[in-house]
Image (cartoon, rainbow, N blue to C red):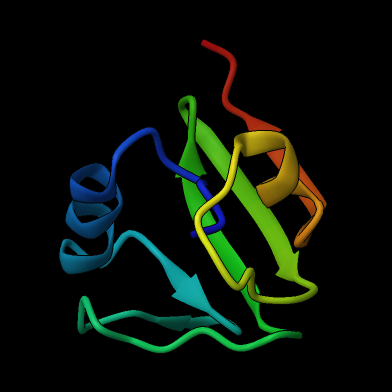
Length: 80
């Protein structure tokens, strides 16, 4: 519900393929729980995105509302 991907199926594919880390540990299950304070590392636009979850939203709202629930720690793009 943090809307880090365009679709739920795209987010699930990243998780199931092991491309996401929670607090530095690779996610090996699609149903891995996320809590406030967790640090997520995930691929984004050919690079890596690191965010900290501040709170979990009570509902799935618009992207602007979802962005208020996490902070960007680092975003690194790979330049060719």
